[in-house]
Length: 141
Image (tube, rainbow, N blue to C red; front, side, top):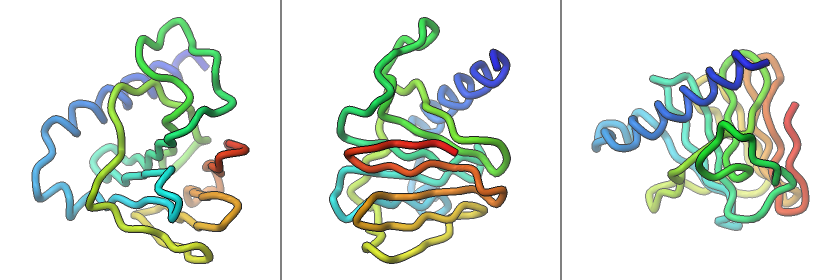
């Protein structure tokens, strides 16, 4: 478990570096999406093998671990294998170029599948692990 936290901390740090280095080519290679409510923004980052979604509201994940010195409970990530995780983040996946996933629609981002419903955004990897995000509830599976 500690190794997984370290790996996701390193992954989140890599997201920060990637974001700082991103250029126009990354915008095409790394699709961004958002919910119709504009309260959930996500980005698929193939180079990190990561789908990350951020929410713009308080979640049930309020107990920030001692190793996290940034925001906790607003960022969620999943890789092609393994379960989803809450991420320690200091940036945002918000993008004015993100494409909306209309309610009732499903989109594929690399190995990930995201479905938008009025009840929230559900994203999963090929092994069925992922998260369901809505204002009232956030679950990881």
